[in-house]
Length: 228
Length: 279
Image (cartoon, rainbow over all chains, first blue to last red):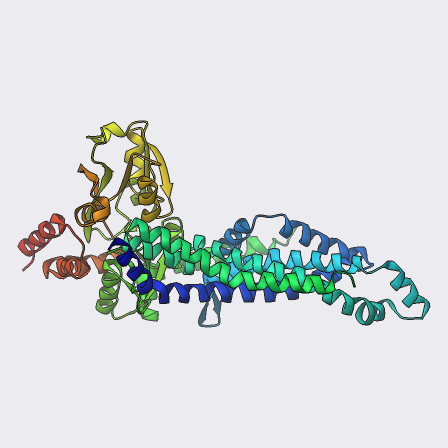
């Protein structure tokens, strides 16, 4: 009977939990998108032959790769204003967008490192061979090195995406109404110990069901491009 | 030699501007009331941690609870559209101070410490005290017995201070459900929360039969609507509204509607007080 009521409560709360998980997925997709664009930019700057471009890029990577994600999320949440005043209009700057930025920063640093690793994994002799065929540095990078890099980057990039998705669980700590927050509200409302345990178990299942296929696909891609 | 620096030359002008600015603002209401009246929007921070005071409806995912009802009622009477912002105990004061919300209806009881940094509407809308769930055969009979004992509660709880004064070792969890789970896992000897949470739980729930509540209520304190510090116009505007909600029985009805048990004797007391004083 107790188990029945717990399961009924979970069934009743499942639409709210799934809606909350949608928020997590939205944050993760935007964060990896923004992080990838930024990361590729920073990564290319870090490969530049000019020190003036290279140094800030290196600093960016070191700072954001070595800071705890939660600290970055707190930082973006409490530093940015809650609304932006443009003319006579007030444009709100919601917390979930701030969390997205907070996750995109470390993601960009990791993407930059993935790019660096991929470029370094291409034998240096290819640069020399291409140069002897009178390709410019830009041409070598864009038409010879990058196409090979993309394949090598795909697997670690997807790995990073899975990690970012799990990182979205931190959003509830700054008051974003995500799946963890929903689970907490649900367990406080239902107030049955069995339900509290079950609801966290179902979060585990939700995140696993989303991340496991990504990790399997990554493994397959890794095998395919391992010895190229 | 003959030229004064630009700043000193502008000084009289700036001073004059400042004085006239001070003069004009004095004629207006405070910033929050101005904003409410200009934008017709009332931004209220509510605590939606689950339970009868504030939670969400699992079917529609809309906020519900006494906090939410009160916010909507205030908005209706002020002729403003209500925007609800969910807050956490950790960030609610910050949200109010930085202007993200205009008011807080967030299970935040009045204490002298909070009264120093924030302003509040003088008439409380509720009064709540703490209770502790302990095992039936536990040796703890009085609050003083919690000295040097591990006690579970939730973060930002107003019972942390009195419990610390009893010498209890506080284990503060993110919300009440984690704290109660920890109590059942014997991580602490007692879980201290609002009596409106503990009493119905122990009375109605089969799985809590082996537990009892500790009386008398710890630190019963008035729940108030919080404003920014010094915003006396907003407080003066809201105070009669809250008094009328007591007098008309709206708050007692809202308590019943949201299944808050046991019914607060404070609400009846306040209703009688305002019915006697009002016409």
